[in-house]
View 1 (cartoon, rainbow, N blue to C red):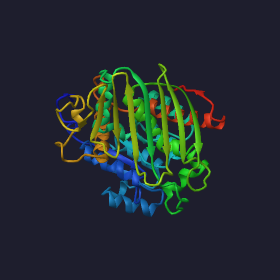
View 2 (view 1 turned 30 degrees about the vertical axis):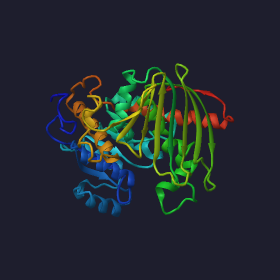
View 3 (view 1 turned 60 degrees about the vertical axis):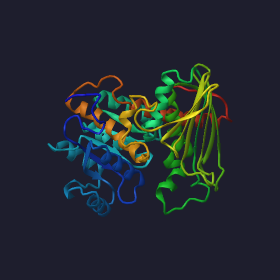
View 4 (view 1 turned 135 degrees about the horizontal axis):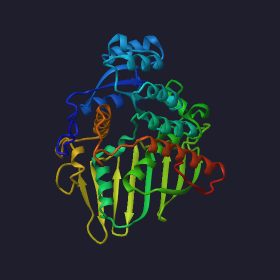
Length: 397
């Protein structure tokens, strides 16, 4: 096994694809389909097993859809973990694409079986469960990765490297927003993925912050490298009446005194997937928009602003070029970001399978600590809101 930094990101280092299983994501599962598309596009994985539904008939039908052998289409994830761990050709990792409140129990079952875990965000709905998963995965020597796919757009990584290189100088302020519209109207009970997000017993202490605020917070942290010191949050219901917030305004104070604002809403008509990050320093600014992901706006102070476009050369950092797969003019989008994420996870898990250390910074992946940090963020926002919008200290532990 070799880690040649000139090889294609989508070239499996073991010269074979890894064996991947899924829990959740069967028929009608939007998130599961995103994961599966990323795994297939990455060229690092064969999907060979799944507990795609707890309903046996639906699990069997979904297994047929995904061309999974009948004996490896399970209806119980516990059975799947036991059976796959016992097989010589068992899965080497599992992707968990189930509702948030179920993440902990499922992850524990596979960690206990010695199977690496790929977990959708947020990590858990309970802080104590998130901390327990960090400890358990580290103690067991199991790789656990979180799926924050937006950070695997080439131009987000370009932003990260430009900030690291000092291209905008010292960061002075940050702004991130994630705007959607689907919670403006009353929830449709037939769309289960929307309905449970607004039920406290299932979603936990937050709806919009837990759902899309964790994406926005991770993107800000990843791109800037800044750590959060304290925050104050206000939750609002700006759409149809519901038990949990559909909108949140969060003031941030990053370490070093950098102020910031995080705004999320799922009740803004005309907004679809408006994840936008803007960072300003004393020498310039950078702006990225998920709905126009191939361009990064760079505005050097006192000079004309220009756009860096996804591709090779033309100002793109060499470390970013491994995330680029098509020439400029041939569009890449969210599916390619998912492919990049699953490719880097494939490299990291392949290294773990054969006990090979990864070179430093060879891949840039969110692990269990980042997952727990996201849950800490949800809790801090809820604490602040419940205290009347007071400032609260933020800690990752």
